[in-house]
Length: 155
Length: 156
Image (cartoon, rainbow over all chains, first blue to last red; front, side):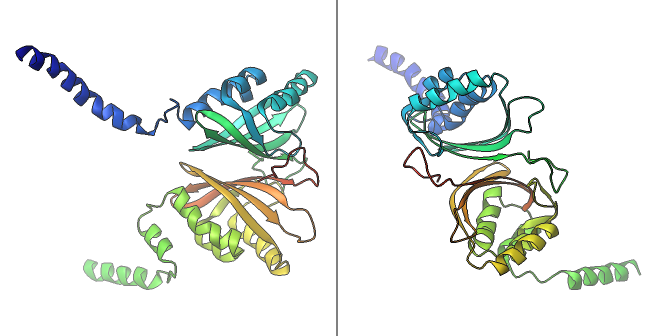
């Protein structure tokens, strides 16, 4: 009896100590990562380092739903579209200007260009995350015009 | 004398305070407690749904609004002077808001602009930055929806 009492005490203490931490982590889904953590993993790998296959295989669902009208559904189709694009355009860069994260969405406002002389295009990607994977993608792209009515730039 | 002038000043400010018809704005101006999403929750119905550019901008947009749309001059008045005549001349023009995503002081509005009922719509993402309960900055990206798509999902 006494032994049980002594062995239970540290268990109770551990539960009490863990309780605030459990409450703080309540937003972490069962799959283990928040949407912010997915954004923090995917954005450097894909947009900044251009590691298409590594980024997609780590973070994108196989049956990824694609809304870009020039691409077909699925992760493999995205990789098959993007990898040759990077091979043809080794100077292509994406500069991420702002990111918004609100579960289940990630919004990435970026500037894509193929050389320092290229005005390039402004784009916004919207990614939807489910079970720690990017499952859906929308985007809007607009070439940066030569002239602007204001001095603020597009970013 | 000092007391007198203070009372006069108070009376002057009280009488100079504009009559504010919008209770949400009145509350916001007393102490700015609205989040960026709450500001957009007021702006979106006025602008995107009712297309009342003048009321939406004069209520919720700062006069020194920084506009990054390359086809618009910067500032609130420039936006109203461009948008309101456009909506007045094009009563068929519509926006359909598909999703609103907020994070801190930024709010993204993914919308479909149908300016000409006979023509193709455009896909748009507007990003607004809010400071002290006013929209102070705006970026957008606009792309015409192509006639054909490689997938069946639409752009929204």
